[in-house]
Amino acid sequence: MMSVVSVCYEKGAYYFEAEVMGIDNAVVESLFENRREVSWIQRKHNLEKIGVKLKESSFYDL
Image (cartoon, rainbow, N blue to C red; front, top):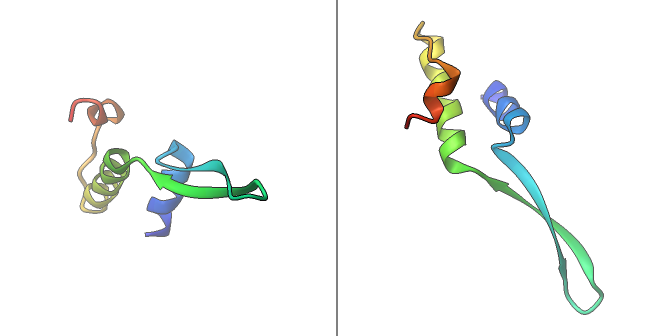
């Protein structure tokens, strides 16, 4: 599971966005995810564990 999280950060599937909020203009960072890309990374990881290899480009074919 940790390797999936690591790959998600490396590929940009998890990312932070900063937003100015409140009267005091505090900057708040929020974590977001690209659900489609996270799903692809999880699927690829699970299939590779059972010996199935996928092409990198097949993410864009979904």
